[in-house]
Amino acid sequence: DRQRDHPPDDRGGNCQMKILVTGFTPFGGEQINPSWEAVRRLPNRIGGAELIKHEIPTEFDASGAALHKLLTELRPDAVLCVGQYGGANCIRVERVAINLRDARIADNAGKQPTDEPVVAGGPDAYFATIPTREIVDALREQGIPAQLSYSAGTFVCNNLLYCALHESERSNPAPRCGFVHVPYLPEQTKDGSAPSMGMEMMVKALHIAVEAIAEEEKQ
Ligand code: PCA
Image (cartoon, rainbow, N blue to C red; front, side):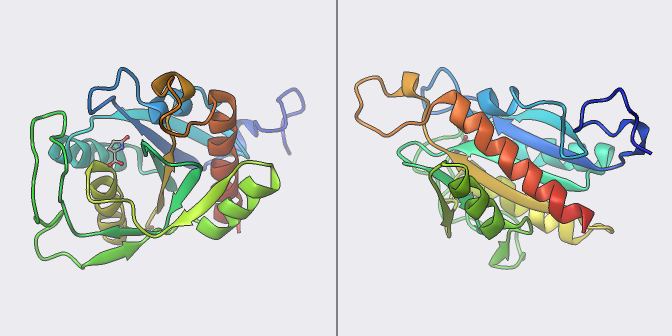
């Protein structure tokens, strides 16, 4: 019943699946954030799912609020948040979010919390609910260096994943939520003092991750 004149990824009106994919605004003196640069280059449909892409402010409070608004308005089936991990030498698929804000630098609103919870009284940690190992395996199979990561840090990225999982646990049906950290783009580290990954590979990595999430949703 797939419409004939649509490309294979486009199942016309039959597809209900919605995946929210977010990137972050630049922070820490950078001019760009590779996460949003890569997210915005993704196609609008992958593996039968509709992608909804949004740029999230690199701010502790505003990021959680922006996500809350998107989850409420869009009610996506799954959420994939993406952030920059300066110094990472590969794609890092995050498995855990912890209930801790402990910032080495101020966020874009000038906020620099130390030893604060993301959600007062919330559980210490949540596990990501996207198929993390499958994503890493699929990335490696396609020749893209990737690792499972057991810490998304204690800055805004960890904060956003924690908020997503905390909120998802309270909604029915609960959207799958996960987070992927990407390295710098080559233009951010021209002197070679930190590792980087080219845009084409980064976009392909996110494409593969979304595909794996869509596949899992169908089951
Ligand atoms: N990376 C930061 C916050 C925004 C981003 O892209 C982090 O890893 O927390």
